[in-house]
Image (cartoon, rainbow, N blue to C red; front, side, top):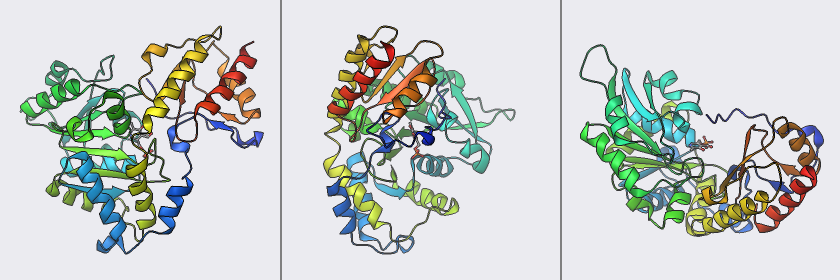
Length: 353
Ligand SMILES: Cc1ncc(COP(=O)(O)O)c(C=O)c1O
């Protein structure tokens, strides 16, 4: 199981990052994005008057093939607004046993919504098997919570789950009368990898959350998309969660810029992840499988007891990684290209020599 609760980097080393592979969330807005933010037309978004927020929401809805969209502060808030919009107290959400909504979002749907989770064993490719979904749906019996929602995730730990797998899971859920939500924090990585449009990937899915602040490179924000009626409910949930913000056109402008400029280039991040995996494969003691690299994440098995001294060694050289053991997740992104990959590999060779 892969929990987010990783130790923070040791800031006491006080070395500015030359390479940061902890996550694709660490990107800084580019000059072009900053210029778009500075020039953004703004208004009060709680009144619905921010033209840049409205433009972002329209653009996102179109991209994702849904009727409407809502700009929210984060992926966690986006998924939570969706779950609160779809479910009532005493209902349950079926989801993968290691999906982010279940293990990495502080149980928000249960804490704030009185909604239970019913975890399903995630298959090796990150998908959910239709029969496993059927086995987990509860009967109409007063002893049971009411199964209401299936939440999927794509990409999942760097794996791009194929369209057929998503469709099969969503159709089975619909057969049982469930609604289907997609945690698409990194959906565009999956779509670029598979050569499938987002709208196609979501054709059988009712709502989707897409993060703008991961591989797409904005400083903050996600978009939630679905039917007009669902987004109206999500809007209320966003307010309840304290997520109504004002002149956030400055942030929405970064989102518009990201959707215009930073989707196709995700292929570069994927190529750099492969470059990284292939180079690390040659270092004795490391376990890495380049043929398993699909998007922007590389998982590297390290010898027992090595991750803490490795992290310190790299930190002293301005290279940031998380200290997971036995497997370290490395992520490529806008600020971590081929040069940074090569620098990282050279320092890894130095440590393991
Ligand atoms: C798959 C997935 N879903 C949702 C989120 C939540 O996003 P945020 O950190 O913006 O709340 C993350 C964040 O890492 C994620 O990886």
